[in-house]
Length: 352
Ligand SMILES: C[S@@+](CC[C@H](N)C(=O)[O-])C[C@H]1O[C@@H](n2cnc3c(N)ncnc32)[C@H](O)[C@@H]1O
Image (cartoon, rainbow, N blue to C red; front, side, top):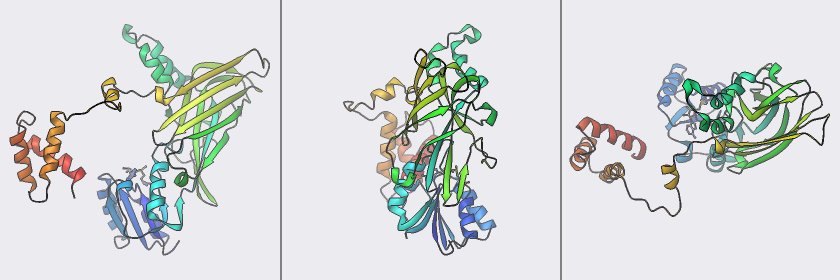
């Protein structure tokens, strides 16, 4: 809308903010946490929008804006609609940045699921049941079958139509777990290897964006393949019953799948349960340190960080902090340049 105040959340190269300016935005707050913001500044200048775009380096949840916004836009959608942090960041941004009648873009995310035949991809999972170079790598098999695989699916790899079981406004649903279920009809004979998943993002009442393999205007973004533990032969008339749980903040998906055979409705039912929570690698040392009963003390490196933070008291220049760190922790830093690198990591993150 001409005259709008816009937040480009996770602006990357800043292209969405530039488009907002072209559409007449009065001001754009371009929030980007990485050094990509430098490139965005240069691109902004090259396009003559420096008077309208203000760059803020930081994580959106930790920055404040001087005025409320009419529009918040972001492409933090990922492959399946939630993995890039949209739900978490939009909930915070709606609460803290948006005018009461402001809008978010996208306004809604619809999750889409289809039954998929993809032998080569499933073989990547099965690889871990083999013995490459004579080694037993089977402990990795359970991780592999509890993982989502980014892949660009083709329409001919689908064993039936896609279903859209659930749609949600990411700015109001927050960190809530999402639960939904659906029945996927099988319409051709083949081998079911897993579920293909993608999104439809509602950008305005009349505009959607999708990475659907069934859409001629799909955006050039991969889908996600969630495998089954073993392939299942299916034929037209069979049905795949899916229940799914998504934890948007933890970026975790649980998929339960039951295959109902049309010709043998009672005798053959195949059930699978998978979760990316079982596909995560968490070292036992790290896990122990998250137990509520754990009593933490600082490691030598923690103490060094504490030293730097304490020295950032608003009286010392950086060079003095670097020398003092080297002096206090000679066992950790072999040279002044090592100490300087450590200090730089801390102050770029925690100082103003
Ligand atoms: C997928 S890119 C999108 C870039 C841009 N919107 C575009 O369309 O080209 C995501 C960018 O957002 C940044 N980012 C992600 N979440 C963020 C957040 N909550 N706050 C600030 N930057 C974020 C990442 O560093 C990355 O550069």
